[in-house]
Amino acid sequence: MEYRNLGSTDLKVSELGLGLWPVMGVYGPVDDSPIIASIHRALDLGITLFDTAPAYGNGRAEEVLARGLGASRRETVVVTKCGVPWSEEKKDYVRNSNYQEITQSAEASLRRLSTDVIDLLLVHWPDPNTPFEEPMRAFADLKQAGKVRFVGVSNFSIDQIAQCLQSGPINAQQISYHMFNRASEPEMLSFCEEHGIGVMTYGTLAHGLLSGTLTADTKFAADDFRSRGNAFGLPIFREGNFQKNVAVVERLKPIARDRGKTVPQLALAWVLRKSAVSVALTGPRRPEEIEENVGGAGWKLTTEELTAIEEVLKGAAGTTREA
Image (cartoon, rainbow, N blue to C red; front, side, top):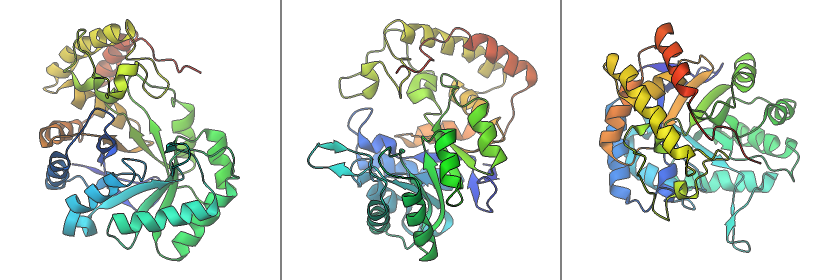
């Protein structure tokens, strides 16, 4: 495993990070045991950054992470989020980034994570009803109190980040970025690098599309979010698009094989080729997935390989975000 600085900070993070979004059940029900086993294996393999959020199972993912890390918490970087609380009235998560919500959410996360400090706290999604000065003021007070080390945002636009920067530092931005979602190239990546903001990528394996295990006949269960055909605004799993994208992945396999790698490893190296990226997140549900993913770090694609990949990706479908 290799390590990078988080943006312009002195915080060292592993190139690969483990994300706990699957605990929410987005790919179907998942037990705690294999997730905890995955955390243990990630630690064994040198992964030091773990990403979670209160909205991942209404706090369950944070509790699972605390159990999985145990005494190893001291050697890790824990990332969690705020600003998307559960609403009993709407029976759904809502966006709320006011000062009180941010500070109360952080306190609750500290308890669930069984820790006295959050290494990196992110606003999960921008709240259109709250001025950005409010979460930034909450961040400043939490840092002053020693409860948070670094702060950032997730899923923010360049303009929204720029507004936040008027009130204080932003150390990280978490975005969806993978071979089938290149909306952040080049503007967002360049902006973050210019401002010393470390980029964390999620959905790095295109939510399983780049696992290399799906076929044109794969059917997703009703409780798997991919069954809706849409992944964060991109219809890459929609009937027709999905079959074309599976064919794209098949064409990536020889490129990976010639390097002694798998498609997931190729996909991770492709994301990590960008100097703006501090860490690429994956959401494995089993230890063996972690073991494979680690092979995506510590090596670089050649110019010829990148050219071949670009040619293959021309066949991708559903890569334009829908309104």
